[in-house]
Length: 250
Image (tube, rainbow, N blue to C red; front, side, top):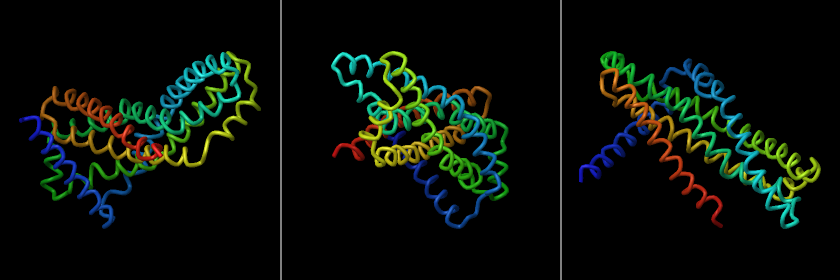
């Protein structure tokens, strides 16, 4: 029973934060000057590790596809298979998971540290809305950077797939790219970008909630960061299934 009421409370907190975010965004009443800093801090600084992770993921996917494709004589399908997998699933989802571990954890740690040192209480005393002042600039920054990171991830993962397909199965660049042209549709990329937007909102909101609601001590920082990463990853997997069903089931 306590779990049920705790879940209801959490949903209520999410509702009020999103409500405040929308209200202050429409009024353009938030520190917009912080947005470029967070674009760099949360997005650009995570780009290298995201590209590295997704490139090797694309190589693994290509290796498995190429092995089976060569066995059944359909090696000319490998490029399209890798590109579709990266655009629909692995690009948006894996990049979001890496962003959680790098940028989501940073959000939770920063806000929980501010809470432990009474900076959030000071902002409330000064009349600042916490959602508008602390959450909204981070959300806008990740909404800008996450789709770009996802698009770069799709490209890097597909390129890594070609590298492995060429080495393992001797698939030429022309065969690989022609397969992509046949199988990959613009809608696949568009749907992947839609996922990235939903994931960005999820990451910022959950990590911000955990940071703001953390205990006011040093242990609270670690606990809040751990819970933020754990809850965000769980929600990403759930939302990825829901979005895949809605976007691709038909």
